[in-house]
Structure formats: C-alpha cells, structure tokens
Image (cartoon, rainbow, N blue to C red; front, side):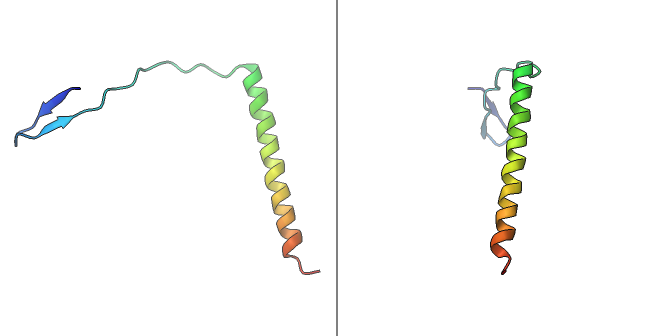
Length: 59
C-alpha cells in the first residue's frame, strides 16, 4: 500500500484505486425489465395507499 509521510512525521495510508471501466448502455431486454419492474412498483405503492385509505376510513 502506498504510504506518504507528512511534515509532522505522520504516515498516510491511501486506499488502492478501483479499476475504471466504461459503462455500457442497457440492452432491450434490460430496458423491458426496468419498465415492468417500474410498473409493478407503481401498482404496489398504489395498492398500499388504497389499503391504507380503506383501513383508516371509519365507515
């Protein structure tokens, strides 16, 4: 590990840097999965809000 020495005699230990790579754009299959997962999440949240309103309504 690379150490550097400061003026007061203190040693600094720097972490090794991770390997850098170029990100690739999502494929058509990944985009479709993201779309389906997003729709599912919206339906889930809307359902939870609906149930919350039903339960909290004193009728």
